[in-house]
Amino acid sequence: MIVPFREILKDAFLHHYGVGAFNCLSLENVLGAIAAAERFRSPIILQIAEVQFPYSPLELMVPMFIEKARQASVPVCVHLDHGLSFETCARAIRLGCNSVMIDSSSLPFDQNVALTCEVVRMARAFGVDVEAELGKVGDAGKDEAEADVFTDVEESARFIEQTRIDALAVAIGNKHGKYTATPRLNIRRLEEIRDRNQLPLVLHGGSGTSDEDFKSCVHNGISKVNVATAIQLGVTERVRQYVQQPDANYIDMKDVIVRASQEVVERHILLFESNDRC
Ligand code: 13P
Image (cartoon, rainbow, N blue to C red; front, side):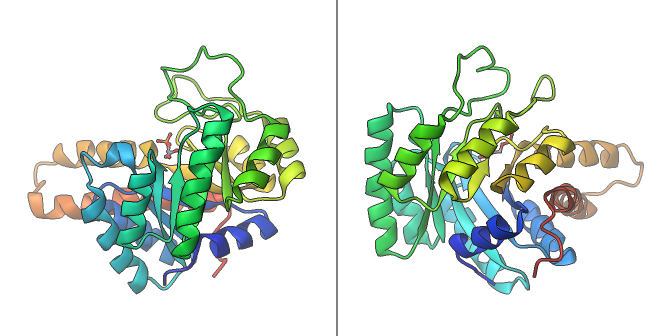
């Protein structure tokens, strides 16, 4: 069933667990993710990011997400991840996304506020919820040497007050993509942001985070955890193993990909403690 972003995150925030938001690039990823959520009775967020549109176009993915979400026996939210412009958020809303992320975190604070406000205003008119980002998450391997890009506590309070968003993506040492070494997240900063704001917080760049940091995050204000790379790495590994078998065939290959996607999502659901919540 389709359930609003705000409702899914509210329960997670109140009960100190995280909802996995899984970037699904294919039908097989979607089938695996929903099967995992249903098996463990977990709410789940299906999402696609603008940088992924060249491989998995928004107009093809969102209708598929929505149909599968409707059929699911657990709460599912369909979300635009990292929308880079007002226009992309509008496209996602028109297609039926329950929530959108406007990512203007690379802009100066005032411009980030201004663009986020425009998106919030439009989204509210359609009953759609909004996530935005403050601080710079960046990419693993590329942005390692940056100075203090962590979300500033006082700025986070001003940002939330001025934009009235529903969830804030924070930068606490997390990065997107494949880490060269396991990161150590700044849980102290996370606690400060949580104490100052009382709003569901989002951890991007979930893949490669240590189990210990994941637990500290979901117990301390992170209500949504984004996972993308881990799914594709899990699928690649399983496909590699499968094609080495002498009786490998193209029909079963599809199941291999669904099962690999399911495995990765199940592992994260258990880590985020979103199992047995519905
Ligand atoms: P990873 O690919 O590092 O899991 O990041 C996912 C993400 O944050 C998508 O927005």
